[in-house]
Length: 148
Image (cartoon, rainbow, N blue to C red):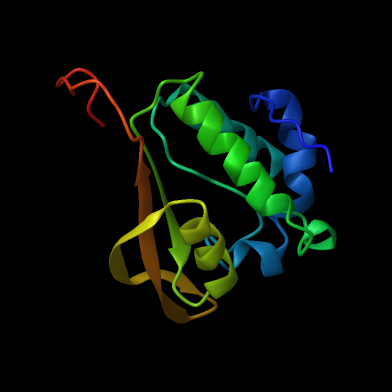
């Protein structure tokens, strides 16, 4: 299996739209449950691309799930974040009932940091979210300018 990480650009919006309105995929992490237009997604990505934090956002197309692709992408992402990008920490939130994803994150070195009670409302029901994080083994000391 060959995987390639590429920086997200606005050129990826048409591909992103293939899953961003898939209710089965988005039910696990999307706060917003209404249909998202391409213009709205483009505006969201524009804002996200300007940020310099280490939040992990991983989506695997349903037809591609179950073959280890998510774990391989996560491993490559961690290596790039702590190597090339020189980040100190990566963090994510995942729905508490998404045990498969949590198990994958734990195997990759993420640790449980806490539970966000009733964080997302999906189809009229509240769901708890789990916050997980992984810290680089050896990082230079922090400064207020780089803390986030």
